[in-house]
Image (cartoon, rainbow over all chains, first blue to last red; front, top):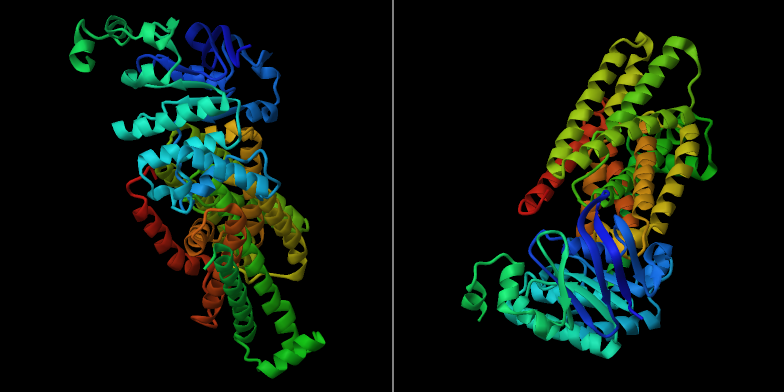
Length: 250
Length: 337
């Protein structure tokens, strides 16, 4: 059984499709990565998978049940989302930011039980940000911020994690720190991850499965990263001149 | 020093400041009444003499009004700031208070012309309708423009339009009532009475309790709409609740005290910076208390600086509040204001 199933689904906004005829699955214990040129509709697919927008046509199944048959409380106890929205709040420590991720479990005034505290500690330790807990979030570096947000996303103990370009603004070293934390977490907790990313050079190491969205608003190819990522194919998918991939990434 | 200890100390200071300001406010006024006399009057509840009337019917209701309506205004501003996810928002600067003012003025003028008796509940309802209409306008603009600065300029313009129409109405109102109407339309706590208090105190108390019960959701919403949605929060319902609660509070203030400037926008900001926190459970009561302190202080200045002439409350709140707002904007110049 797959955690997420897209079955002949069209995704878009206000009834206007951006990507049509989407068919793929995201499975337990695996990282499924969406790649493709800017504007191809990666975020739209992610938002649809996260139940934040409705599909234009067709269905999305979460654990074999139609996504719109879930109550939002049930859906978001399975599924956790990390989108590109910037966090702008001041005077919040890294701990506070992660704490908010426990929203669904805490009581009416957001009081933390011992249980909550230990889950927050465990999540932050797993991602390697427990040492930052008392630092003000705004004073953290971009890499630290993204890892705090990853800890916030997993603190609700999700079975499915959906992430939109989580490492885009990080330098090479921080990207690798980030993906190390993510892959280790997925291995340990055996959850399904659906992620969009631009780091083609890292994708072989990070992703088990790659879903390529082409410029024509269709899924271009689906397969294992090792088989799919060839210079010729990347040049075609991203609209590069022949030989350019080798020239720059080779 | 632990955070909670720090919060406790700051709350204590705020409450002591309120008590101190209440005492000064009772003591000061155009009629000098000695501390001894005041104590005997207060302790005996003696309303019979002239001094008793001054204390119980003029000074105390005015103090109570400044405490509750000042707090309500700060809270209303806080809720609007949450709604727009931007600290530079408030009921006065967005023209919402002026919308309420216009509708109350229309009601007052109608009452004078047609000759029906007006009561406090009608005032609140008229103010609420006016503030909702002004809010609706602001929301329509906010859907079209994403920039908070343009939204504020629009709000200020709406404020001018509403004030102009109000002035027009006031000019043509019945002579004998012009003075009252004119004072009110500039903002003042001087018309306070106990019958009004029996209306606004319950509204304000329900308002602050509702806000406190929303605090957990407000905190999550502060991290952005999409994120809050992904926590399973009903964003649409929550935003409606925010705007209705904020409008009820600012409408109540406007109905009784007229438009009071800068309390709503500045006090939540001051609260965040004094408490060094963004937690709604801390900042909601803190903003409320700061609004009370600020209005007690400004009202004291408004009536004592040039006694026996009284300044309108907005004149004084603007002198202190506007610089705070300017410094807020300077501090944010690198971000999308």
